Image (cartoon, rainbow, N blue to C red; front, side):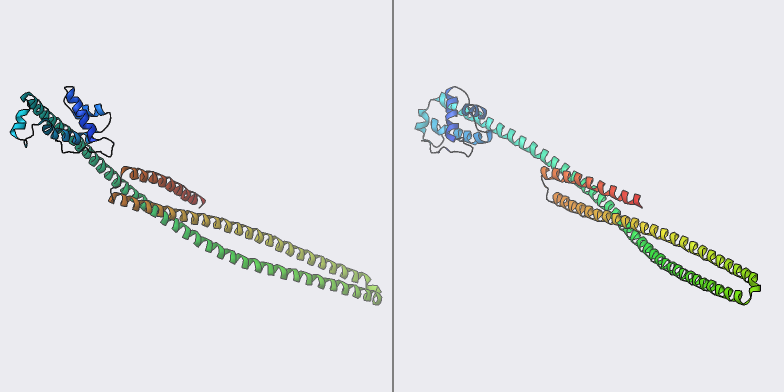
Length: 333
């Protein structure tokens, strides 16, 4: 009696199906093999069918009454041709099972060797990328240091320009005060001249009344006084014109200095923006490098390595943008 109970696998192929297919093949005069059983059932992988078929062969002797643990009477009850056929089938099945197992084992060993080689290649590629990323990090650090040095130089130049503007403002105030003093002096001279003219008229009237005979002489004196007043006015106007010209020149210089200060502010702002961008790119590159190092240490699968390569390309594009920004800063200088 058969003491083995048919089993059901998680893949849906039952041991009873394999045994029924093997019995059907025997009835057709064919040797039950793994491929023939799978074709007869219509499903099931070799790894699933193989152990069930081996179980069928293991119980075949008992079912045919040729098992070693049976008594001699039962063995003699089976005809010799049937026993020889069962033994031949058993030997052939064992050989085919061993060959199939060896083939599967060889395929698995080849697959394992290929996987190990691919893993070593990926490991080497990651090591090369790590070296490249380290070089990029050093280059980015150098660019950041250069940007910081440029920012410090621009700040120093800004301080110098501001000091120059303060000095110019002081000189401009001095010139304005001098111009105001000149205007006051001119007004004082004009008032003085007016008073002199008025005094001359009074004196002329007095002299005309007292010295009618000296009228011509007094007229000459009056003409001389008028000429002196005219000359004094001309001198004052010339001084006023020179002062106004000097004021316009100082005003023009002041406007140019303010424009220079605005340009320096713009350059400093551009340098600070470039330095901030370089610092941000340096932090991104450092984070990416740390991630790749962890990836190499933990032997990550191919999918994660491909994602890391994509991120590396994106970072390289961002680094190119940062370098173009630094070039524009140098052009502004």
